[in-house]
Amino acid sequence: MDPMHIAAFSSILGDGARVLTQPQLVEQLSRDFYWYSPVLRKQLDGKTGDLVVQPLNVAEIQGVLRYCHAHDLPVTVRGAGTGNYGQAVPLHGGVVLDLALMDRVETIEPEGVAVCQPGARLGVVESEARKSGWELRCYPSTIVKASVGGFLGGGSGGIGTVAHGNLRDFQTVRAIEVVTMEAEPRVVKHEGEAVHDILHAWGTNGVITRIWLALTPAVEWSQCAVAFATFDSAYEFSERVATGDHWIKRLVTTFEWPIPSFFTPIKQYAPEGKALVFFMIASTQRTELADAAREAGGEVSYAGHYAGLATRPLLSDYTWNHTTLWAISADEAYTYLQCGFDPVTVREQMKRLRERFGQEILFHMEFMKDGDGQVIPGAIPLVYYTTEERLNEMIGFCREIGVFVANPHVNNVEGGGRYRADNVQLLAKKRYDPKGLMNPGKMITFETDARAGAPVTGAAGK
Ligand code: FAD
Image (cartoon, rainbow, N blue to C red; front, side):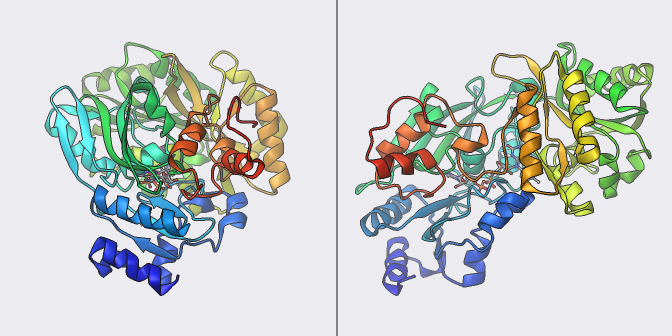
């Protein structure tokens, strides 16, 4: 990058040590976990920013954006870089805005709302919340590393979603403060429905600088692993617990064999050849759950108190998209899909997938509550990857038989299945980033509109 720009950023921050130019470091801070996808690996390997800037406060962010706007420099915001779709990988160089130093949990409000800076680690928010009798409603299995800003910018849900829905549901995100990319960057607060303008926009329409996140009363949790002779019986039992109002749960995950064989550190809890179900269940219901599991033909291979994120084993470390990581470690041909099965026809849908693709697809189910309050069989199935054509055939077949797919093998907001049909993320980009400098290339309908010079109205043209 032009030394003039480097000097300018050092002067804006008043501290050259927070402007990183060392190529290896810049490259490292330009990557995320896009390599989960063999398709994205081909597209994104070698893409990097030109330098990294590490602001400490909103005024510094405004200074950086003002300068970038004046000099047409692209800006890619970074939380912890644990995203899976290359969201944080700059496609056109420029500045990586690393918010890791803005990591304060400002307050846990008495009515159960965490107010924090974007770089705050979710694990820290959870620990702080628990001190006042609250806990996160939902969090990704990367809770220890992932930042709140990155979760809002690029994540969706995880542990807790079975009870409280995803991040976008039930007003879990109460408000977001965002800094715009304009000649004079503004600080704007989005509340209520307006949070959806910014949620899951991959940092394409502003920099999130403050978050108000609704919590839920803390529960004493236990963990439980139950093995079943067949996947069908494991599924049956897990569905019953996941959908039963009686059960107080934070996690219900079902794996078919051989997925549990990939979990090397906890092999002793994964009997050979058996399907496995992991639960986080209220401690008051642990014995009752174990009894019900035995009655259903299950074998409780592990049960213990959950004493926070340092607990070992930590079963959530093997769930959600951690499952894929364990599979890739065992055989790097594995990749994944993100699916939503139909709660009524799920068994038929799984049967048809098995008939068509055999062991190329392995079932890893994650039960989740949807925005209407219904618990549905979500899934992050493993896929044994051969070619992109075969992967697309599987995605096409899923959709044909009514299985929803949020495709994790695309590098744009619109293609990933979480883009809103009402276009609010795109409309916010038009307002807040008229030059298209925020994470350019990731909101493809914006570029199309800009090239065509067309006004943004109606559907996104997906
Ligand atoms: P980053 O990767 O740094 O950023 C994500 C996106 O948000 C990028 O586009 C970035 O530009 C943007 N962004 C970051 N900060 C800001 C900001 N302040 N303002 C505006 N935009 C911003 N995800 C889930 O939802 N659930 C899971 O259970 C889950 N499990 C995972 C397991 C593994 C092993 C891995 C590798 C990933 C998993 N993920 C999961 C994906 C990822 O961990 C989460 O989405 C996480 O919340 C991302 O946080 P981050 O701080 O790393 O964000």
